[in-house]
Length: 315
Ligand code: HEM
Ligand SMILES: CC(C)=CCC/C(C)=C/CC/C(C)=C/COP(=O)(O)OP(=O)(O)O
Image (cartoon, rainbow, N blue to C red; front, side):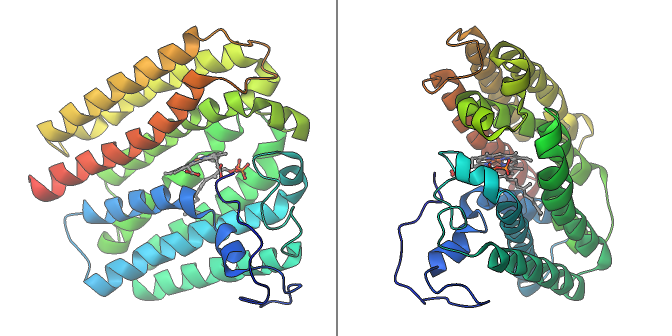
């Protein structure tokens, strides 16, 4: 798994009463840095497309608070999921299941950083931005992780809201209000999450099955999941053009996003046509799904880049 780190010199970052064999890299790994890099980018984009810009220090503090808050939620997720993370190949090298970090330390760390990020954002900006950040942390670490993830195959559809709030946080930090554009950005990330995650779940299905997590391909099978990916990609396509129809951006965004949508639909069709192992149990060689997962990351990044270019450089 990407956040896997080799054992590092002991005591480098020994705090909170750990056993002394967790390194700085492990503390960072708890924040799921690779995943939150894109989350933070969408938050920064939400701030940058607002009609007013904050001062550079306030802008940087806002980005840092989104980063720390999202990471803190990831640490709480890793604390709660330590039992299932130990079972799955993708996650069993994480600091807690691998025994490099006591679970309680991760929990204290996650809660402390959550409080810190919300309080600092409140002091630096306003209650609206801090409130949405607090709600996102709660939604990801409690609603998604502790409740939905283990109880329903719709976990991602509902839980995806957590990762969709950062553009609204970024906007609110500057404007202290809400508007159509940040809500449209929320909707785009929200509807992007199911095809993003279900593509991965197709080829990680065996692991989820072993861990007893009711992800869609485990419960409903691969064929159903492939159709759902296509369905959500079509819905995403329609919603991705909301900023255009709402006259919130111009042709650059519309053309870029339409091309990205076309690519995503082609990916989803390839995933659908891939008949390999429709049992939903072992899909380790599912190349179209792997490609669709990688494409989903590029899709969101370039869509937000398109929005930034349109609103910041071309307007
Ligand atoms: C509840 C919603 C989501 C779920 C369940 C989910 C699930 C996942 C999973 C299981 C992975 C593999 C992680 C790993 O190997 O460490 C992943 C990777 C990733 N996700 Fe998501 N995701 C969600 C939302 C998001 C959001 C909102 C974003 C960004 C806006 C995002 C960005 C990424 C990125 C950048 C990666 C690749 C990390 C890497 O390169 O290792 N995800 N996601
Ligand atoms: C501002 C704020 C709080 C943002 C939250 C950001 C957010 C929702 C990120 C989701 C990223 C992610 C890896 C989800 C997977 O969880 P998982 O537990 O299903 O995946 P795992 O098996 O890799 O742990």
